[in-house]
Image 1: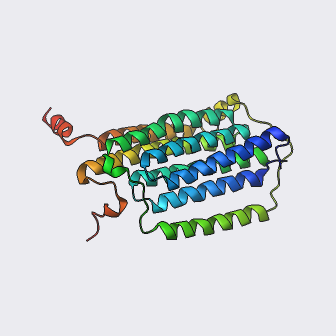
Image 2: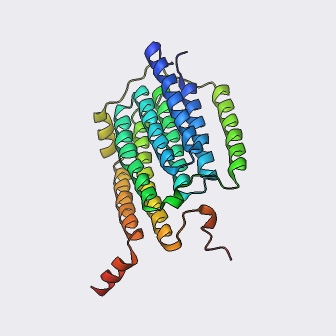
Image 3: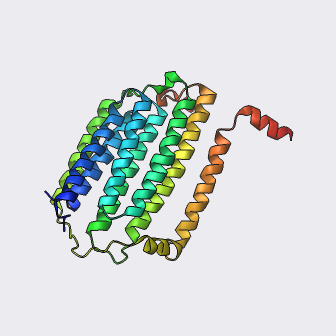
Amino acid sequence: MSPGLDHFLTVGALLFCLGLVVALSKRNAIGVLMGIELMLNAVNVTLLAFHRFTESANPVAGQTFVVFVITVAAAEAAVALALAVSFYRNRETVDVDRINLLRS
Amino acid sequence: MALEGFGPAFAFWLLSAITLISAGGVMMARNLLHAVLFLIVTFIGVAGFFILLSAEFIAMAQVVIYVGAVAVLVLFAILLTPRSARDNSETVWGAPAALLSIALAAVLIFVIHDTAWSETNSFQAPSVEDLGRALLSTWVLPFQLASVLLTAALIGAIMLVRSPEEEAEDALS
């Protein structure tokens, strides 16, 4: 079976949903971040699948968008991991259930 | 038009299996370090998809940035928190999250297979030169904003992880 647009989109959707369940259910803040990275990768697969299989007035636009998504994902990962390390130093935990300083 | 021939089809199914199984491994692994190793395999599988979709530069960037930088960063963060924090278990929201995700997957797959996508027959892969020219002409403003964002993230990350002793030293000087 030769893979077409719908096959790539299906893989992207499944990868996104796996990332979603990781991001929503993990107890560890770093685990949540790994779920978010999975979701961003799934989005990139979807973007490039549309870039490859559909007509566009600007054929480079798909790849350019993916470059920006990767950039923002890298910046987000750096800040989020710094937050996790910093929070561990102050509160001795990275458990998202116990990060509840704003709860009265 | 689908990718014809045995090679692309074989590569697609192999990469799908590798990527989705290792993404499942990120979810199932009990040790956070094992989860990161599964995450690296997922990133490499996604890079394979990028090559299959004629985006060689993006695949290279994926390997360099995700496997080379983000995965190492995650490993650093795990190793800077102690052994007791390496548990990768679920909160009470595990089952509702799984249900929500299965429902979303069902909706997305239904929509993907129900839509009549207008696929092109004449795809010309843009070269790296085209991409570079586009980044520095059409999208030069977002490109500059991305560099400002990276600088801000770099400074922010350094400020966040400074220890209290270092801040006290800076206040004295």
